[in-house]
Image 1: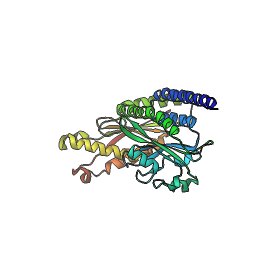
Image 2: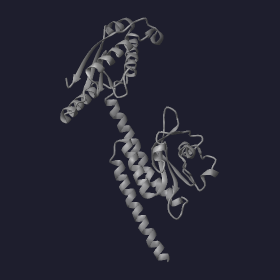
Image 3: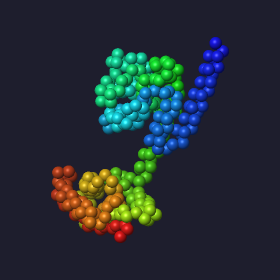
Image 4: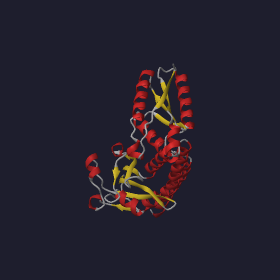
Length: 319
């Protein structure tokens, strides 16, 4: 009996080793944070079958945890939900950097029952461990209700999860850094809008896509040049001029739909791409943008008494 158990454990160990090895290769091959998280979630499912498992990451602006990805019985209901670090198991783990194994969630003071109420889910057992990279806690992984004969999580389960999350944390942080660098390449430093490079590449790709598909869809481009803005720079200085450009960029972005691509083309020129938009609609949007710019109050924001207007051109593809 002892030999049979030893053989069984050896087979299980080899299987876990292969899964972890494959997971490391798969995670390191991804440069997109979402793809890295999808890989992590997939391998958690292979290593530890359970009713549900999720990745929660710290949100820098609010300091809360966000359900970035969730699998299992109520996965879709949890995605994008937020948790406080103070009143949840996953939050406690992300705050302290310490893992937990809980046999009865209802008896744990850190358990937040609100998600069970809104999802009609019953949380019994919990295994939760931090995602750490280079000493920085990125968030936590929470696994709920282990399946199988032994319903409680074990130290072996925790060791297995930590063995996965150690390389996962590094892969995830690397993906976020890569994404940040990619964004910097296509972002205007002053306005934080897209720059000339991005708008050029995006427009070229969309035109090719429409041409290949023989689609009836149209794409519109609004090109906007601020009238006499050099005088604002000369009169008030480049610092005020830069702040004014940033305000105008924000006004333009707020004046269009989320699908629109807004960029600072260069100097005092802006370009806006409007997907699936014909000429009459583009004209309406352009007039709205022009009004928003001319109505901008720089006295309240910058303490200067000046008005800015814009000259606008519109191009539509296909004509």
